[in-house]
Image (tube, rainbow, N blue to C red; front, top):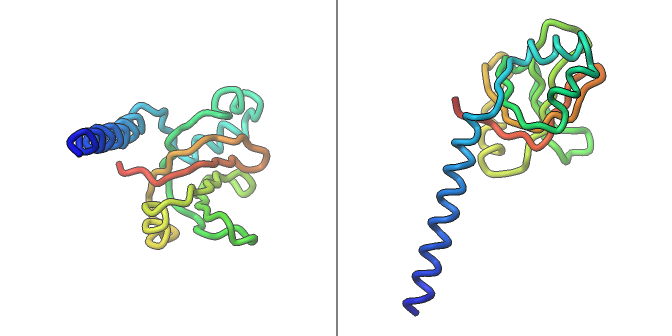
Length: 134
């Protein structure tokens, strides 16, 4: 019984520190505005893909659209940019925090999202996204 409690306490400590590390790692990720990211992709998609594709970054900006994919499976946020055809679209991971915040996000709000850049052709797509506290 005592060994089980010790094992449980150790497991809890590992999980708690992993959550803390994940939040700390957010601060180490490159940060960029949605406007700047879209501008870089518009100027040179290949160079931007080489710089960002497959990497996790934090994007800051003003929300243009909050919606659910037509198949009803993925929720996403689109950031405003200075371009008609180049925008940043972030597909969210389904977790409790994202669900709560997604319900509160409205167009015009300034937010930050962490995600993996999938690349861009007309828009910059990010996956595995989560809302970030500033």
